[in-house]
Length: 631
Ligand code: SPV
Ligand code: MN
Image (cartoon, rainbow, N blue to C red):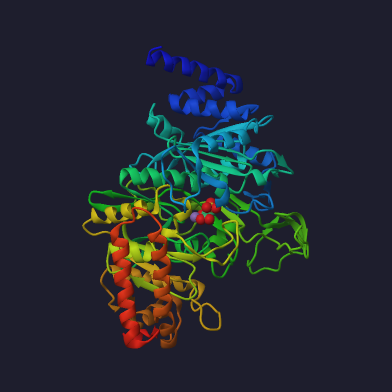
């Protein structure tokens, strides 16, 4: 058979499958996009999962409203008393991203790092298809189109999502830019991400077979499969599932796909300076992006590209799936406002009592009973292991559209993104790195701030909490290329720029000898304002073996201006002392990791060795812990 004939035959088969499940109107919406590769993907999904029917959602508000209505009609979401608010619950054992259940499909002959969870492609595909077989029987499936990055821009990546969860579809609708029209512009090109999700069998609305949760990523086909889970980090395909595909695509095409916030910092005289920030999950990324008085462009994912010789960055998303724990009226006024006023909000895994949501650390008295992620709940309720169940989960979340926030920066929608001047790396580190520090240059920053990032684990990921873990640029869990190649791409990216963004580290989690945090929740504002001044050459620095730290006087002034607080010299010394022993231990830990990886750029070892020598020299001269006043 000739190629054309074979294609026609394939498409006749595809149409036949689609016709069996889609009514005329839905079929028309799908075929109108004229993309045979997309039609084939949807047909294969339908043939595998066997939904009763299929709803194709366009960018038409009536279609979108149908999806929202179905999320409630199907009891995946329940309306709360405040208009526009709903709550969704995930299963008791399905409360975070699950790296153990998430694997890349490794084609024959392709070597993956042992740090990247993977399985042979053939075996993995058989397994996931087996688990997805017939899972949508008796239910309607949903097909949605979205765009990663601003539409009609160099950043844009088209995505098609097939799911049997209208909560997933509704969440994506708040979190991403509509992509039906973007898909139309794509024409017949196969260049898009494919996302297939099914909750699997459910009992009382939650996935029954969570022990058979299975997430598989096929880099060759730009496809992700996810089954027997509902938690958004495992199911909202455009978030961390697409991130895995886009890191790979970026690595092939010479741009960067990062787990980073984007924000505009308001400097003096109306100046706005844009920063990106990489922080592992639940380490202050969203609260940094929402610092009162600054501008939020994005809180989780950013694409970085070189345009006209400049580094430009765009928010991949258009909404927030944010941690709700500790959101209080006083410390988080912006988000508090959105979460307590009428408007579209999906709460997940909070406590609901009398139609009102409550969460851990909300500054209110929690009711003694209600409904939470364990079902009907009352104070003192214990789980099967005898553990007391808190009123809400630590990883309970809210989902909103970004434009709801009072400090939303419309630059988010600029097809050219924003001009990026600084990149910040920060982890949950109680005892090693200083509060804020500038790297010497792009290579030094990439290696010693980004490639050495460590953090103590949190409830955002299933598993033990509080364990210090290596997390390369806060992206390790999503890496779809070997760590060495990923770092090399960062180095190459910076080398192509005449003035690459300058790199900083922050540490919000440093603790004193009494075990208490040394800085307050809102001190972040001072660190970003200092970075802003530094980028414009308005403050000087002190050189340390690990970078360049602020002068006491500059911080004292900023604390007075931004926090209306006195910043003592004692606090400065605690926050900026060079902890030589801890820093050397960290270098040793990180070197060991890179020695066990292949193709790590020589610059990594050289830069770390040189840093180790500088620290050791200071230690020999001035002792194990050196005050910034002695530098
Ligand atoms: C994170 O945990 O980093 C998140 C939420 O942004 S999730 O969608 O679970 O990845
Ligand atoms: Mn994240």
